[in-house]
Image (tube, rainbow, N blue to C red; front, side, top):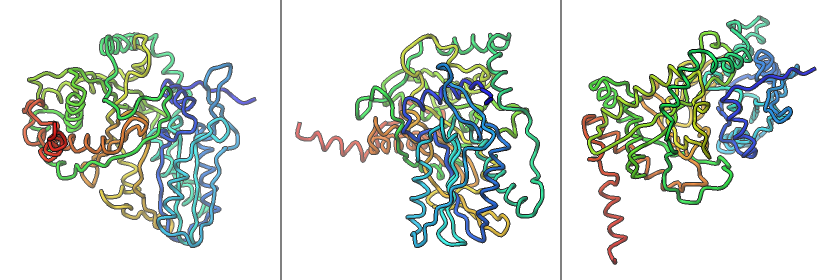
Length: 456
């Protein structure tokens, strides 16, 4: 008889999003690799199977039993390596095929949360598309997937056992701990904290280019940010006022949102990892959202806003075991429509270097005579109205804005991006400057707007 596993709070939220937009791909965690060299596709297929057998979440289906969403582990992994021959495909066609596979919606009830497709152009030239639904994992999980995939491949090629750390505890134990936590004294303290943050809060929303659909489809786009020239200056500015760089980056984001909405209060969410030392080697979704609720006024500076943001992030991490949504007063619709995320992907970046800004491929990694490079590709577009994703790595500060394309035209998000970069420049130059002193519109944009109204 198939066992039935309960879902974590994050998984239940992701299941709701999946059921509302089953044809969407916003929650596909994707990564494409270019593989060059004598790849043994049979061994790679066995490696995919071994990774899925090792991690129960990857060999599970997701469905509802008596109206309750659950996870259903399978003895045989639903996912298998799919090999597609594409002789004569151009480089652009090869990448387009991998992108299409990555964006293909999951059918969690039948296919499970993992898809691995290998496009073979020649016997020594491949594109490897890997996609996992967010309901099964987080960014640490993605590093585990790729690291273990090549560890199994290397071990199978050598006829050895892979040198992998033992699994610390099953994911269902984490889910059980989370379910029991609200009734503990610590859980009650967490609930009191989140109630204080969320009581009276309303969702912060930008004016949209189109009416909000009754049911979100979670379709989106991406706008790149040019942050590398600011990286060192922002770190120095943050250090000068005694905050970390991420709160200063988020403060500028909140300041732009406040300016665009005209509201004195801004509520955003940032995903926080809930992994403990017991969960380091387990593929699973270890996330809760930390709401950050800040107020701005005429005297609010970048430094003071960053300090308050940093305080709430730190306190939120201390209370993240209890999903904040459990302490939210009853209300209609989601409370968090805009977010900010700092990616911590040191393990993934070390093994599979991220492409430099403006480059399509990262530096090659070497495995068993293979050259493996990571491709630049948009990821998880359309989850929220607007999401700021930042990554501090070997190429400095890299960032993107992803957005819901049912709500916004690309040009609108481009304007927001340029405004955000302008606010970051102001914060880097003088973090003690009042946010209200920074113009929302650049001089050239203002001249264009005035020219449009010149006949009035």
